[in-house]
Image (cartoon, rainbow, N blue to C red; front, top):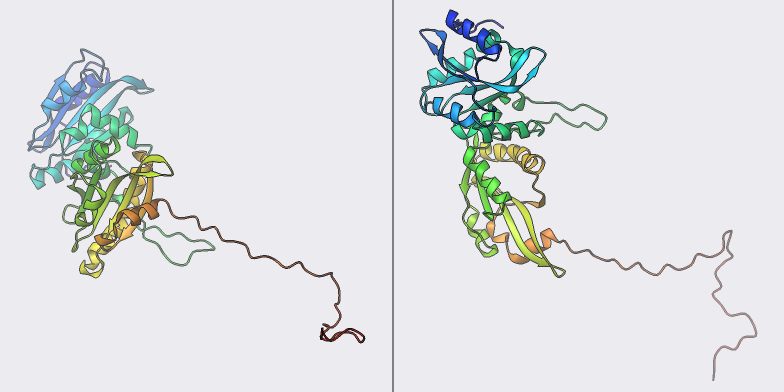
Length: 349
């Protein structure tokens, strides 16, 4: 791949890369200075990789400047030690710096040797690239959708593609769900919801940032649900429905997509509709939460106790089968007799 920004590695970087690949170092921080890649710091190993990860990585991350971190694992492949490549791009850094580091990322990987890099993670907040964040990243690799905004950044191109399914039953081209990433606070709220530390989570889409953001986690009872539904904006709601059914106490997860009809713009309706399925799939497949009922409403007044109960436990209508008159013998039947034979009494006098 060509050097798109024209920025290349200095001699000191090339030398320390060679030393690092041999296992001499645990961590390398690489920055862009004077239009070239430069060494911003290094650390040697003292403990196992996971024991010293946070203490070595997090102090090197500045809140207003991007950088690259190369962190050595204790595992190896046929090329040598395996490394984690961290692309740090905090929200408060200047846009020019973000763009410069993003465009130079491939150059650094090429100079270091892509075969040594086991995992690549992107972070805008320290939680994204902490040891806990890295482990969440590993878990997310088995899921069809990324977990957080940081992980989503690496797959934006694929997620924005329009795919066409063509087959015998195909009727039209379909646009796959747009998977806006979850903001960190939204993901944290869903994790708390899964652990039953909160019983209600409301999410909204930030159209400018193209993120699904946390809107509300107020403790919510069934009687409170109607007033949680905005009358002029769409929202996603996760509600822990606590109730009894046939003598059993149940806690059922209910997903509610509220869209107040045409009071919302076309763009809002389209984006909320498109993001809904990827969000639900991520919650069910990655977070392993079983959603008992998914529903769409346009008015919070619908959310009564009876309505919820009947949605989660629909009545089983037992239809009585009408009595079936036995069929007569097969074959041609004679004409229907409509008069009595001669000799029978016409009636009792």
